[in-house]
Image (cartoon, rainbow, N blue to C red; front, side):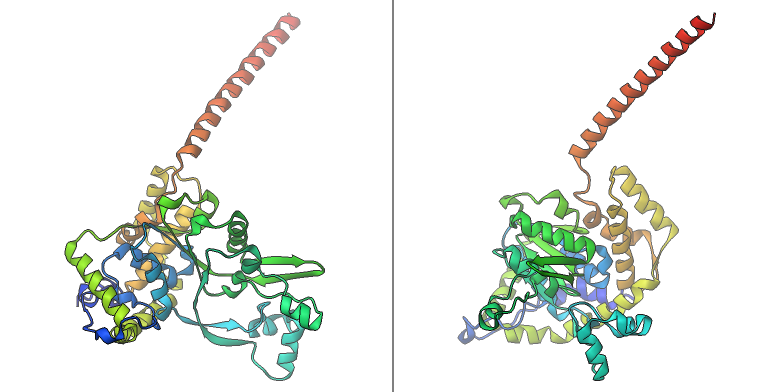
Length: 391
């Protein structure tokens, strides 16, 4: 293996892994899919796989939007991330109480339940694996933000809220399939939670606040409708997923899919060791990200790209440079080079230029020029009148 390429990028780009096909027994046909389709078994689709890995390595990338027609592997790719997601220490409390809060603020900074836990010597946090939380297409607002626990209300005559999907997604990956078909109220709730990292639920006398700090991954078929610009802006990386153009790759994808349907457990086991290696490399890259800095040449190229595209939103630079830092970390480097910018620029900057906004600014500049000229003319006329009066 070329030492100029890290093991993580080598695993991602290795075609030999993706070309292995299991000779599964047809007797297993119809078995329930227990294991997710292995990430390393996905044939082709290099940009999609790279974008998803960068979002795991550096959550500051701001999530990923996969845009493509049906049957191109978008949902399978997202679900396959489960075995690659890291383990991190998280609060056991819905309100986010931790040992760090206890040390810095004391018992007054904890909720009553956690203050009792401290008294009993119980931990406030635990090591948990990041997981993928899926938002069903038919989800209603109460499912997303949380609603009244009807069972508790009927059995115990007590008003209590159950946690919604957004609260369950705290610290995890929130996957929204067919994101362009969501109800507006659900979309607005996701936007608020993504922007603030928490949200508030008000039901009668109850008024509770939940943490909701998640990495957002969405997928959509553009044939079924456009995505609201407000939620498009919340996705850092935008990937266009096309069908495989190489006939050999298409046949490999068919064989992989058939083998998985016949015996998913055995297919998953075939890729288990390489999946474990990739998960370890991802964890190492995540630890390396904070030390990665933007090189001078990479910074110049990145800023020039955004400037020439006439993008107003500062999220363009933020996503571009954070994705480049993740790419450098994946390649076992502490400096972002121009090649890192080139590797992520398409997915970070596409769909950020707005012709409608450009036309709005053009009209605004034209109007400002007319107003400025009118003011100048009026000022000149007024000055002439004053001179005449003095004479």
